[in-house]
Length: 301
Image (tube, rainbow, N blue to C red):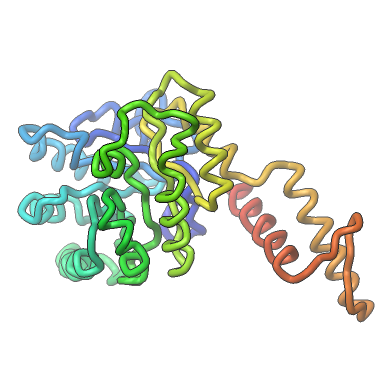
């Protein structure tokens, strides 16, 4: 969803920056646009060979200039300071909502990036603070520092779990088993770190684009852990991820009944409120209100 409106972070798709047709599709510019994608992550890092970095920067810059609607537009920068400087010089312009900062291990890295972003905002004539940051946690060290990273800058809107690099750092097997049960602790810790700082938590990719069942199970696990959404790598994964990270019809109806019962009881001056035999204490009512607020945002898409 565009800047200036409520931000949806259910589905975030990585798109190689050196593939113009894929960029156009993700941004809603192509003949067969990706449907209902929340955020397009235009990739300059792992998805782009070193020899293609410069052309990818130019391709992304051109796409940002042409795109006026569609999903949020974030660019995943390179981790190298030299490459990142060239990235920002090319893509910090009108049409960019923010950046994904990869392989973050320390809050100081985010603060340095925030300073660079401010300089580029000034140079490009953008509003100060308009470029947001999604910090990607991809290592054991990064996970230990995640609370400080999440709280390091107002520009940070979310932590993203870089599952593949994290698994590599820990020496885990290449194949996912049991909905990635070996990553449950790390995923839970990242959610706690993000939420403690008032930021969103975005789960890592499900790498097998042919395994729709595995994606669904993994995404449902992520939602139960408290993630706001999930990163993905193929347009065919968008619909399932959006559905799982959106309130269901039954959840919305129950939330409406909870809020209505609570509000009516407050008008009557009742000291205790129950619905279907369940005591409606403040956390339950607040979760219901959040469900309705999320539903309203999605309905305006």
